[in-house]
Amino acid sequence: MKKGAVILVAGLVILLMSGSALAQAKSPAMIRTAYSVMDANGDGVVTVTEHAAFWQGRFKEIDADNDGKLTAAEFTAAEKRFFGDMDADDDGVLLAKEYVAYWCGPKALTLAKSKPKAKSKKRLDANKNGKIGDDECVAFWMAEFYDIDANHDGKVTSEEYMAAVTAAFKEIDRDRNGWLSMEEHTYFISGRAGTAKK
Image 1: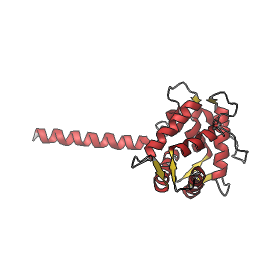
Image 2: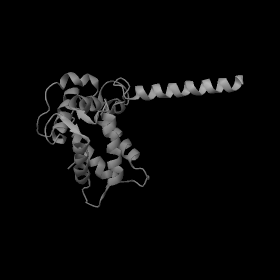
Image 3: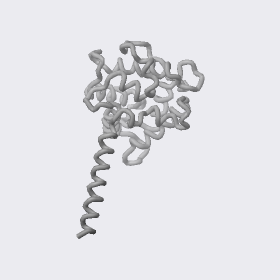
Image 4: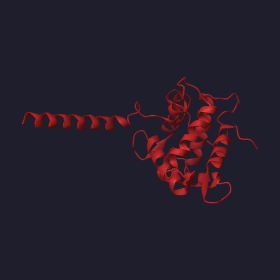
């Protein structure tokens, strides 16, 4: 009987701990942002090389069947999960501060106080020094947020986000064969960073 009670108590402790972990998983302090993953060496600066490595790893994660191609279904499913990662408060919409914090880290929020507005498409490494500075990161992702926010109400719904994802898939699929190769994906990402070769 004592052994059964010990097992029951241990089971309850595990359940409580896992419940607590789930509750904490989306608290802002616990969220693992794209920025924190990109900054592979943890020095607080994302280089163009780290940016490229992040997206190559992401391609492999999205490629569910490991065939070296991303179908529209794989791409869309991954982006739905991505939206959930960015939506820090789980309210079903993205605010500019959530979006910028996810891509540029929390310290960049002080640079993102203005309302997102249309800007010419900048590259992440606008000054071409091999590093993506906070100001460059914020300028780029604020412009992206504005583009995704179709009705410009300062919020990106999942519908607006997924419409932008569909458009991005078509843009990345340069040969129009209905799937993305690693080369197409890399070309698109390097173009956004400002390192694509023409």
